[in-house]
Image (cartoon, rainbow, N blue to C red; front, side, top):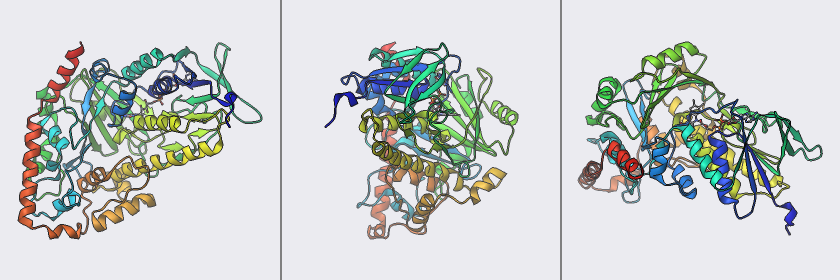
Length: 528
Ligand SMILES: Cc1cc2nc3c(=O)[nH]c(=O)nc-3n(C[C@H](O)[C@H](O)[C@H](O)COP(=O)(O)OP(=O)(O)OC[C@H]3O[C@@H](n4cnc5c(N)ncnc54)[C@H](O)[C@@H]3O)c2cc1C
């Protein structure tokens, strides 16, 4: 039997970046009836990372649960919609492929469409069978329908402010102050309270460490170790800078790689999944990721500016070189000086230890290649609510939390590594290293099965389903030796006309949608 004095009554969150305010909003929403007090401590002296502009579709569930109105949210965060990511020069220089949040259509006779596509000799690029890809290529956008989902690009600082208002409206309390000490209970090793720079102490039953890379509670107080994954994901720095928004003509003039991708789009022989940038206008509904000799560069279109960054490996380029490379490749004038960020890819060995759960950068970091950090904060919070503990924080509960969490992180890690190892680039030491590196067994197995059969084995806690893996495998020229043998039982003429019909129907649906720019202007105007 549970005694009422075992109930958690006070939660303290340390950190007011995206992670801290997401935690405050979610906990205030779900624990309101349990009368748990939520206090968030943050220090204006320390500041936030402030990047984190691209998301994945699961964020819609979060916004929905928090009662967030989409139009209001887009307006206040200067947001745009995101159908996926265009990858330029990752497979090899001049080749473009994509990973969009959708599939390649319904299975045919129970078999995934990419097997049928592989059978066709004279075929359209695989992307033409994917509605979100064609929408992206045409710069169109509409609220999600069958076959795709969407996410957002936004100003990360404005999103944190938006969540703060949401959390405070539900009773979360903010305390300004710098945590200078953490005291532990000698017998249990639990955190008892945190000490602020003005000498005050704030006690709680449960602590959320959202203090960023340092991991003030989870690492500095509880000494949980860190699992370093940089042998597989060697980029360890980024420079980020915002630039003025790009006009239509500027995009057309400066997006040189798009010429190569546009050629690939009409080529039926090239083994490509296509590129999206050709006609997408001044506000493409997707992120662009361009591989560079020492890493890769992101471009994220917001309403009022473009987010840019260069993620790189410091072994192969200096910070100054990376900054100047980023600045020379901007499509419009920079709005500030580039900001340097250092990180080590990996995760805490346990993100839940005793009465402390680490989330966000305090829990670990995988580079932003697939924009998964905010997603990982969200799933961590969902798991906390699902496994909400008593005040004694039974170690069996936290161990289960950590097991599921480790699986989730490792599945994403493998997906990111695939982008690096499945390259044919041989123009720089970084790519030569990545092409030859030994990958984790879990990923090697997936690659072996795909190469052999075109099938993708999925483990538990996979964030990415088969169409996503297929996008990256085929997009980076990892072709299977054979496709599903049952595909051959379908008469070829029947298959060809069915596949042609799919391409036509997708194109017509995409063409009937408004442009992304019109969609955003319309949504924002509704509430302005
Ligand atoms: C280069 C780069 C690009 C990224 N791009 C993306 C992306 O596109 N999509 C995505 O999902 N994620 C992205 N991320 C990750 C994303 O930025 C973070 O996951 C997100 O911002 C959460 O950060 P945080 O809140 O954990 O930490 P921070 O933003 O660092 O916040 C830490 C907070 O802790 C407080 N704090 C620290 N020490 C103390 C103290 N002693 N006392 C009191 N308060 C303290 C600070 O004041 C601050 O409020 C990116 C990260 C990097 C580095």
